[in-house]
Image (cartoon, rainbow, N blue to C red):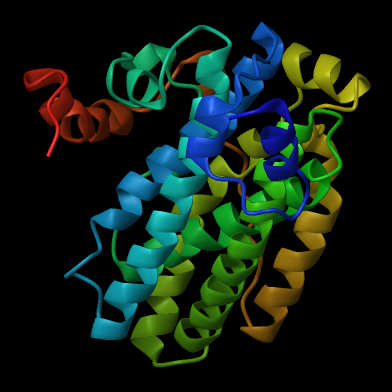
Length: 275
């Protein structure tokens, strides 16, 4: 692809695809690559979790909805990981299938088990609101590739956010049983919220350059949006203390190893296999 063609693709609001990034020849710095790796890992792990629901959701339409949300997340992961991989001459597959658990940089929220349907909705409520706040600011990144990926992703995450809020209302205001399960799902999910908004040396340095978004700056608007959704559902936002976290440093819960074993087994058993 010529430089001009690449520049046309990588602009805000354009339909930037992972394939475009792969042939762009753009090489991010190690720091930008590390940041893209975090965002890609979040989306990849969530996509793997959501794909489990296909054929298991409470109604056929929900099979399709959760499957589509999982596919959207997989698309975001492919774009971020392809871009990150250029920093170290690796492909998206290298990063997805041939890294060990301590090398993943996803936050703990995304690797939490699906639980029952209400628990998945609680996790999805947090994930979609966090990603929406993040991507809606990342579109202004000084790194035009990150900005273009975010510009495409935020449109899809806006739908994910609405989907989770609608289910929060249905379950929270439904039967006594659905309300109980929704409250239980929220309680299980909330300890993993705090980690999403932790700043560290990487995000601070990149935010100063206008490349990244400082996670702590997203918290106020996140809390306001969540509080509004809970008020509609006649539910109370938990105040439980956060869990220890550490996913950005490669310290994960006991759940990620099992997820990676399932996700990576085919690629590791048959390296280079194709359809």
